[in-house]
Length: 211
Image 1 (cartoon, rainbow, N blue to C red):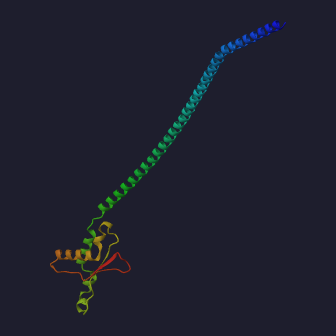
Image 2 (cartoon, one colour):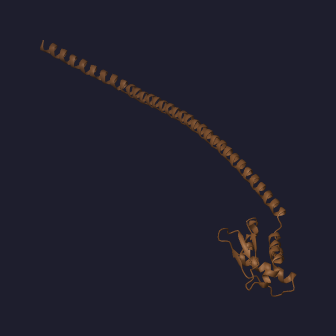
């Protein structure tokens, strides 16, 4: 019986070792399959991540292009509005300049008309003619003047208020005196003829007295 028991134990041990060897073979066969599945899962996950990343990139590109198009259209509208406003302002300025030029042309024509209607030396000739004329009071009272010990001074009053502005410099007492003396010396036989004085009226600066 002891021998039979020993044979049975050996047999059980043999069976146990064979079972362990079988399990190791199964594990060795399933291990490569499990590793291949992990690689495939990682590869699939990587593909999914890449696809999701590409979708996000495309979405960002589309949004950027849309915003850029909106900004470009807005800038084009602003430029068009500013250009139209500037053109309108330039047109208004052009019209104002045309109006001012027309007014200046009218003023120039009026000045030309005034210059043609008034002779520049008419006032000077009037001074000389007045100085050459003898007042009627002197001829009617010649006998009284001869008898008088202190004869009255002969003078004439000239109004310069209507002298054009371009010749206002010729209407000063000094210039009037010089002109009258030259005219009198040329038109008479008195080469040394001189005015006693040319004075300005204190109450009216346009009235000059030639003595």
